[in-house]
Each structure stands twice: as C-alpha cells, then as structure tokens.
Length: 175
Image (cartoon, rainbow, N blue to C red; front, side, top):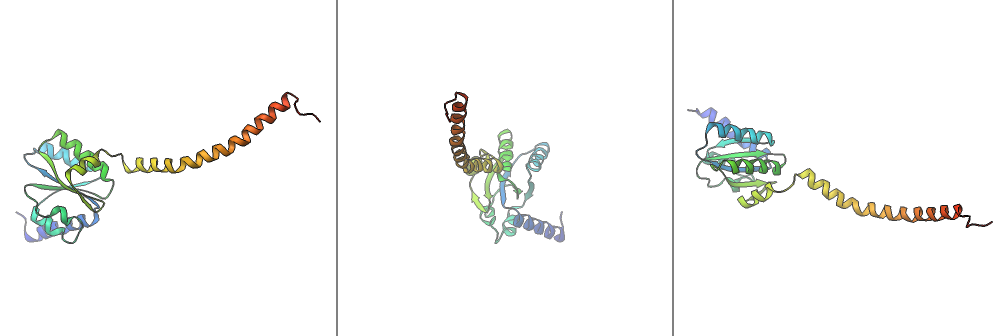
C-alpha cells in the first residue's frame, strides 16, 4: 500500500505529464494478462508515447484546469492513459492495431492537439498518413504550379533554339 507521500508524488507526476502532453488517449483494459500489458506498453513506447494506469478520481483531479479535464471527467472502470507530445497519428495507429488483436483493450476518449475527440475520430486519425507525409504532399502541391511555369517559360526558349538550329543546318538563313 502506498503512503501519502508516494501518492502525492504520483499525483504530481501525472499532473506534469498531462501539462506537457498535447495528445492523450484514454483507454480501458479489463481482463488483460501480464503478457498483453507488457506488449501494450512496448507498442506505446515504440510509437513515441508513455503508458500509465491511473485511478479515475486522481486523473480527474490532476487534470483540473488543463485541456485534458474534459476527457478525464467521470471515468468508470479500469482506465489508462497513452500520452505523447509527438505525432498523434503514429500513437493512434499503434493503439488501434493493438486493439484489433486484443478485444479487452478499448478506447474511452482522446485529446489531440488540445481538442477532445471521440472514439470514431480516434479510428479516423489512425487511418491518416503521418504528419511528415502530409507536409510533403502539401509542399508538392504548392511547388507544382511554379515548376509548371518555369517549364513553360523554358519551353519557349528551347523551341526557338531548336528552330534556329534546324534552320542553320539546312542553310535556310542567307546572308
């Protein structure tokens, strides 16, 4: 049994983690084996996140005044948090893939970039490409018109050069 000082330390650690995290996924995990829990923690770590089992009332109190307060209010059953400040898509993909193979693992709510999302939005997030890929596509779309303009401008000069070269080869130009 934890004493009061240990509980206070756990509370402060949870508060700091919630303050630092911009992405939080609240999960339920009933009837999971130790091996399943170990694999889940490894999956979350590999996705760049932290996994923490929490007491519902402590999580609610620790989140007061933070964006996560909405999703941690009134939790029931066994709850855990998957927290990341990195790419939420990567963590959502990892958790969704894990949930497919382990039906005892469920989603309760989520917080992405400071906004509360529901379970359907978590699944939608898991199907999105990573941030880097989206940025690359966006930059390509922004850059494409400029490339087409430069190609068209160069084509005029190139075409003129080809015509002059052919005319010179066939002696079409007289002095």
